[in-house]
Image (cartoon, rainbow, N blue to C red):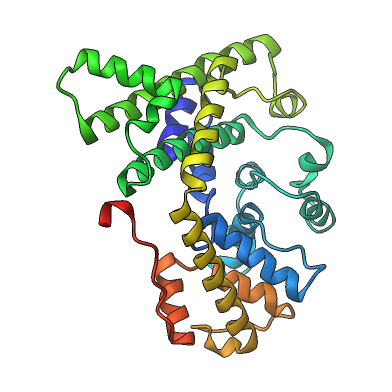
Length: 318
């Protein structure tokens, strides 16, 4: 995502350092096991604190850079600029936006309440994340055996690009064909975003960052490419995210994180390292669990419960 963002940003003469900072911090709030882990922590927090706001990984990313990082003696967090923090907060519920309005004088939550847009760099990172996410999931789906290369022909964009690659390289097969198809697919989306965004900027002519915020999104796909990308997202939802093996893994992931949350909440001394005094133990536990890797979460779950979680076997392992 950072590489894609910088490439597009360079072509559009945007702030590449800001793009990279946003991109690198974009997923800091992600839990173990991705969205399944986020759902588990959200449900766990709401079960003990119905008014506690639950868990959102984008809001957690901001929390990491604002509060949880302890690098300086005089303050918590990393003391990032408004523009960086704005870009990190990709999504935000109205509940959390209202909390930010009350507790954060910078006004970072205002756009989620008044319907304005973030900076061009933040808009770009959101789109670059979508491009990278779809490509990685296609690759992971084929690599795991949950998707076949033949299935990808259901996607007009992928089929067209694959056919072009095969015409130019008649012996191209297997993984090389997939890699070349994904590479060309990324390039086509990148050039589409650059062309579409240049036209939008020329049309609206914003003369400041504040002017950008009052306009419709300027960093975007063309209508034709948006249709192609939405087709990919729908395909992945039906054929990968709802695949029985993925569904089974999702259920296990939720079980692991719910168990960990309950165990740590009952006995915070089980948490490794120094435990600062905090009034909100549920949030403290969620912070700790959210920062785990998948492997560490499984290892901790086994240590605390004595259970070894057996993940569903992937097709390629059968």
